[in-house]
Length: 575
Image 1 (cartoon, rainbow, N blue to C red):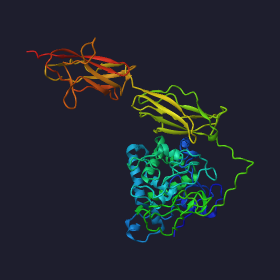
Image 2: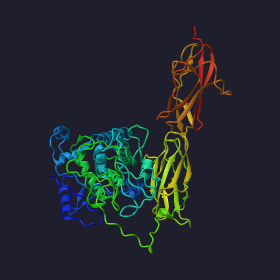
Image 3: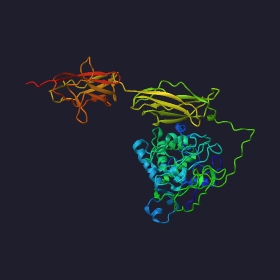
Image 4: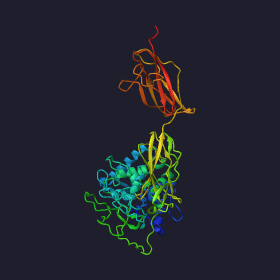
């Protein structure tokens, strides 16, 4: 029978059992997992520079507790005969490899969506399964309804600084039901402030619900794929996992499950998944359970060797769903009345000040030269360090930060300053807003206007000198083709218009002579939304002539002021 080993609480002494387990696993677990001479695991990568853009403490979860159970040493057997659905007895290794049907479907759908939207990320669904295993035991063994929503919320413990990170409420209890402190929420354990910008609608119901496994899995996929990461590169995968929960032990636990699931897995009925029993926040075993008793949970087959979850939480116990113990924990010593707890840096912030942000202007498709920078200050106008500042792009724009996202969270440095990642312009031109706010405080933010201007061209020339002629009622044999340049260089993707005008002095649209046809074959004499190709070339549609003979003019204009007038001749053919 395969044994299960849990990691010890941070700061606790390493036991011989844990060291032996890690040493035994190190030879067969995921790439990038190594051990030192004492059998302790060491990460294949340290937290990357972008770790601070995650949730509090450097992670989407606020570094909440997670399940530390390691996979069995025996590789899973993915053959159908090993599935519990056949009624065939299975080994521990085979049971651990089973993933509840709806949960597994959510992971695979998230992978498919990321393959389409961010193909360079190379997200494997097994990575989502590994994170889902350590965060919530695959949504408490798959206790979800047909739409993927958990029968009752999965909540982590209060992040009140008592053994965990200190994160004051950021959502007024909207996601976690706690108006005082944040809690990690749902199968993938997002803290509310991260879910607010990272949340996704994975099942198409029009909602972004952290307790829906489709929504949570898709959000986790996008979160891991930020900063143009390629998860097929081990160092970049390690960095992505560390931004989810900034812990070397967490990284190694996730990599171990990733490798295990890659060797094979199978679908099991919802509600019958194998439940973890050890948590990073507690040395004793614990069974995952809902934050409150479910009121509409249908009966589900019992899981072997898994005791029933208690119906209520006891004082001092971390909230189930985060891997906390269901046994009473020793109460924390109350703070002395003579030594009040000092305020956190976030609580001392009074306002944000601009930190010499430059003019935010860029050409379509280019990068902004300036970055948004703000300084967190107290009432006494002193700089406040270690405060999370969220930068959000607002408005009808496809501009993003350099990582490809519309939201970034940065921690202020020793001077109290937080600088947003570089802005990258999209193809949409016009103004949009970048808003800076303090995470965890209801304070007025700072708004910055950013402008995307069209790509310019200062010269237009025809690519051919062939005369453009046509007989009345006929069509022109040659199509008009021009090339745009800017300061002598090719001007690609430049917006342009083309109009058949009355004369050089009257550039209004002509009502006779040559014309274009729209998709329905109707006469049109003005073309808009034209764009030069990557080589600066613009080829207009075919021109036709009505029965009016004479010389006519076609005017082409581009953003940046380039203009070209082309002469068209309609005359009877020579006899």
